[in-house]
Amino acid sequence: MAGEDFVEKPGRSLGVPGVLVVGAVLLALTALTYLLHTLPHGAWSLPVALIIAGMKGVLIALFYMHLREQRGSNALVLLTSVVFVAVLLTVCVLETRTRFAPTIPPGPFPVEPLPGLEAAPGAARPPGPAGPKQP
Image (cartoon, rainbow, N blue to C red; front, side, top):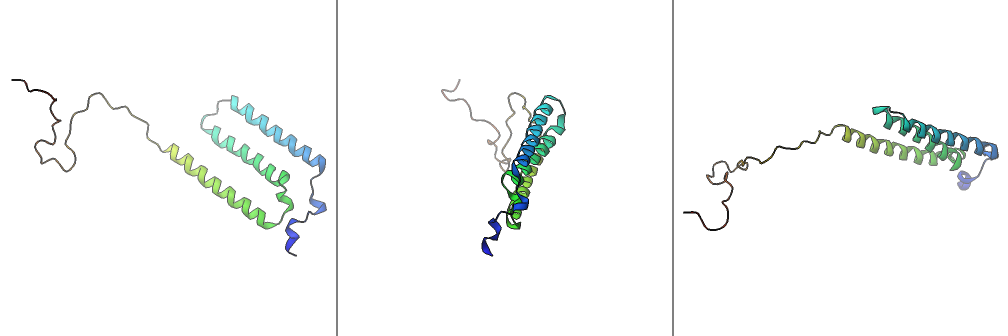
Protein backbone atom coordinates (compact mmCIF):
# COMPACT_ATOMS: atom_id res chain seq x y z
CA MET A 1 0.00 0.00 0.00
CA ALA A 2 1.33 3.47 -0.89
CA GLY A 3 0.35 5.17 2.39
CA GLU A 4 1.91 2.44 4.54
CA ASP A 5 4.96 4.59 5.34
CA PHE A 6 2.90 7.04 7.32
CA VAL A 7 0.85 4.58 9.37
CA GLU A 8 1.81 4.53 13.05
CA LYS A 9 2.53 1.12 14.42
CA PRO A 10 1.05 0.71 17.92
CA GLY A 11 3.95 -1.40 19.22
CA ARG A 12 6.58 1.23 18.40
CA SER A 13 5.03 4.37 19.88
CA LEU A 14 7.03 5.96 22.66
CA GLY A 15 4.40 6.84 25.27
CA VAL A 16 4.64 9.34 28.11
CA PRO A 17 7.24 7.45 30.21
CA GLY A 18 9.49 7.07 27.16
CA VAL A 19 9.21 10.76 26.31
CA LEU A 20 10.15 11.64 29.89
CA VAL A 21 13.14 9.27 29.87
CA VAL A 22 14.42 10.65 26.57
CA GLY A 23 13.90 14.18 27.91
CA ALA A 24 15.86 13.33 31.07
CA VAL A 25 18.70 11.89 28.97
CA LEU A 26 18.75 15.06 26.85
CA LEU A 27 18.88 17.20 29.99
CA ALA A 28 21.72 15.06 31.36
CA LEU A 29 23.67 15.42 28.12
CA THR A 30 23.12 19.19 28.21
CA ALA A 31 24.37 19.31 31.80
CA LEU A 32 27.39 17.22 30.78
CA THR A 33 28.12 19.67 27.98
CA TYR A 34 28.03 22.58 30.42
CA LEU A 35 30.19 20.81 33.00
CA LEU A 36 32.77 19.83 30.38
CA HIS A 37 32.82 23.44 29.20
CA THR A 38 34.32 24.48 32.53
CA LEU A 39 37.16 21.92 32.32
CA PRO A 40 40.27 22.59 30.26
CA HIS A 41 40.76 19.70 27.85
CA GLY A 42 42.56 21.44 24.98
CA ALA A 43 42.35 19.77 21.59
CA TRP A 44 39.67 17.32 22.77
CA SER A 45 37.09 20.06 23.35
CA LEU A 46 35.73 20.08 19.79
CA PRO A 47 35.47 16.29 19.30
CA VAL A 48 33.83 15.80 22.71
CA ALA A 49 31.35 18.62 22.10
CA LEU A 50 30.48 17.24 18.64
CA ILE A 51 29.99 13.72 19.99
CA ILE A 52 27.62 14.95 22.70
CA ALA A 53 25.75 17.14 20.21
CA GLY A 54 25.49 14.20 17.81
CA MET A 55 24.05 11.97 20.53
CA LYS A 56 21.45 14.62 21.36
CA GLY A 57 20.59 15.03 17.68
CA VAL A 58 20.13 11.29 17.20
CA LEU A 59 17.85 11.08 20.24
CA ILE A 60 15.74 13.97 19.02
CA ALA A 61 15.52 12.60 15.48
CA LEU A 62 14.67 9.05 16.54
CA PHE A 63 12.17 9.72 19.30
CA TYR A 64 10.71 13.22 18.94
CA MET A 65 10.70 13.31 15.15
CA HIS A 66 9.40 9.71 15.11
CA LEU A 67 12.02 8.45 12.65
CA ARG A 68 12.23 5.10 14.40
CA GLU A 69 8.54 4.57 13.61
CA GLN A 70 8.97 5.25 9.89
CA ARG A 71 10.27 3.07 7.12
CA GLY A 72 13.61 3.16 5.29
CA SER A 73 13.25 6.22 3.08
CA ASN A 74 13.34 8.62 6.02
CA ALA A 75 16.33 6.80 7.48
CA LEU A 76 18.12 7.17 4.15
CA VAL A 77 17.47 10.92 4.13
CA LEU A 78 18.74 11.19 7.72
CA LEU A 79 21.85 9.15 6.95
CA THR A 80 22.60 11.24 3.86
CA SER A 81 22.28 14.49 5.79
CA VAL A 82 24.53 13.17 8.59
CA VAL A 83 27.17 12.17 6.04
CA PHE A 84 27.09 15.61 4.42
CA VAL A 85 27.36 17.38 7.77
CA ALA A 86 30.28 15.12 8.73
CA VAL A 87 32.06 15.90 5.46
CA LEU A 88 31.56 19.65 5.88
CA LEU A 89 32.74 19.60 9.49
CA THR A 90 35.78 17.54 8.51
CA VAL A 91 36.70 20.00 5.78
CA CYS A 92 36.30 22.95 8.16
CA VAL A 93 38.38 21.34 10.90
CA LEU A 94 41.13 20.27 8.51
CA GLU A 95 41.25 23.72 6.95
CA THR A 96 41.67 25.46 10.28
CA ARG A 97 44.26 22.91 11.47
CA THR A 98 46.49 23.42 8.43
CA ARG A 99 46.62 27.21 8.41
CA PHE A 100 49.97 28.90 8.73
CA ALA A 101 50.51 31.13 11.72
CA PRO A 102 50.02 34.75 10.70
CA THR A 103 53.22 36.76 10.52
CA ILE A 104 53.77 40.48 10.70
CA PRO A 105 56.44 41.51 8.24
CA PRO A 106 59.12 43.95 9.40
CA GLY A 107 58.96 47.70 8.81
CA PRO A 108 59.68 49.54 5.54
CA PHE A 109 60.03 47.07 2.73
CA PRO A 110 62.86 47.17 0.26
CA VAL A 111 61.69 47.92 -3.25
CA GLU A 112 62.15 44.91 -5.50
CA PRO A 113 61.47 44.60 -9.21
CA LEU A 114 58.25 42.97 -10.27
CA PRO A 115 58.60 39.50 -11.76
CA GLY A 116 59.26 39.74 -15.49
CA LEU A 117 60.45 43.38 -15.32
CA GLU A 118 63.99 42.71 -14.09
CA ALA A 119 65.52 43.90 -17.39
CA ALA A 120 63.82 47.31 -17.32
CA PRO A 121 66.26 49.75 -15.69
CA GLY A 122 63.66 51.99 -14.04
CA ALA A 123 61.31 49.27 -12.91
CA ALA A 124 63.05 48.60 -9.60
CA ARG A 125 63.07 52.20 -8.41
CA PRO A 126 60.04 53.89 -6.91
CA PRO A 127 58.89 57.12 -8.54
CA GLY A 128 60.47 60.29 -7.21
CA PRO A 129 58.59 62.75 -5.05
CA ALA A 130 56.20 65.10 -6.78
CA GLY A 131 57.02 68.77 -6.96
CA PRO A 132 59.92 70.93 -8.14
CA LYS A 133 63.31 69.30 -8.39
CA GLN A 134 66.12 70.43 -6.15
CA PRO A 135 69.04 72.16 -7.99
